[in-house]
Image (cartoon, rainbow, N blue to C red; front, side):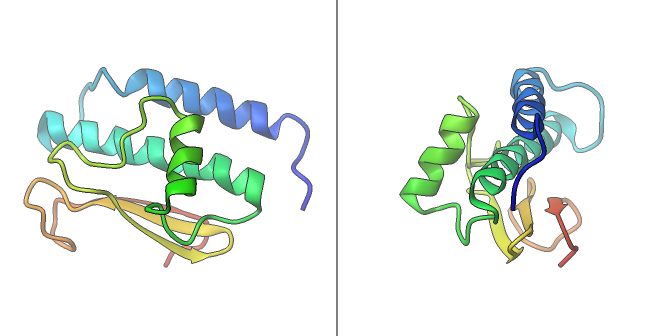
Length: 123
């Protein structure tokens, strides 16, 4: 599958915007850590979008060393752990779909304070 001209540049510009916003958290619910977690999840998803552009699919895992290198090279300063020190949840839900999440402040996956971002078809 060929990417449209400028797709990588557009994605990279979006990543730079997200990465620049990681340090400054404004407004929103969930307190400062919740807002930070939301921005971090969105930055991970943006890095995964770049991975998908180059590989025509999302990775099966974000714990594989080669994938981690690609993601962190795409977004310098990218963290794969939430503000509470727990790794983000991730699952590939198909070649063009994935989900990234933080279990939130309580650390319980599936509770009301989870922060989730889906790409592609909803799981």
